[in-house]
Image (cartoon, rainbow over all chains, first blue to last red; front, side):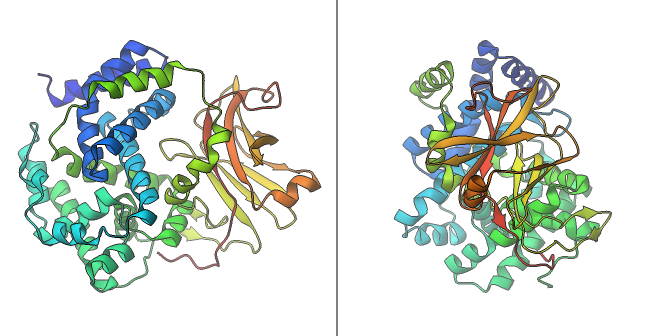
Length: 187
Length: 236
């Protein structure tokens, strides 16, 4: 098992290979990252078929855009996840007109503990990072996850939760501040 | 809690970058933010820092192996001839819209915490690459003249250049080559000017000198439309 730094390095090498048109590197990159990106897409689109379509789209883009990856500016997994998230959220937004009934799951997410991903602390993250998410209040974190995984704006969050816009904005700002403080100072 | 951000304050600016990455900004705020992003190195650093911070949410998810067919579809799709992207623009409209109106107010330049007021009557298209690095800012005067300013074009070099296309009825028509640095004025024909504000624009990577056959050959960097500049004051 590779440690985090080796894993980064490995992914960077494969991305560089893809930029050179090396199809073996592309396959290695897929093997090393697709399960993470797939999990992320499933979380966003909540549909296996759609997540697979999105994943396909993500890798086609990676193949064409790998030369734009700059290791001095982003960690490889963050860069890959950003591509995946954009594609997943775009898919969601295109579904929206046909799917006007998504409010209830949102509410359930906010209130609920029924979100299976919540209990699954997966691969070896440093304790500090996970602790930082734990410094968020339950509601704060749920709200931020709705924004992060569902691409919901302040106004969409406010209307789907029937909360005043100002409150939603404050919760999120405080959540971001708290996360930042924890990540910077370890508190 | 004020609703308006003071982006000359580094803390406020940093928090606005967090909101941007979290994707909670509404359309107008996002467009304004991206206008600043196109010209502010500090702001891009803030955005990158937040992408790393918020990646925490992804790291909590359990990896799940996708079915084998997905890889087969990917190899088939990437092994095949390049798709003619301009014919697929319709399907990509929704995506472009959600990426944000990349469209913004020219002149809302972030310069050492100084904001300038945009001139009236112009429309803008910020060309961004996959990593959302702004390559060029394309603005149109009311008369249909295009002012193209290089920001950080990542895919061009001594052998390759960016070429700007107007897509009319599914057919790309070249509007001209984009500069690797500095700015340049393009003067479309009267016929093209008439379509400029309602047509899709796209930028592709082409050999120096431009696409040899008059049709795009290289990968697309970005596409979108000119969006009229909203009013004046920059508030987030």
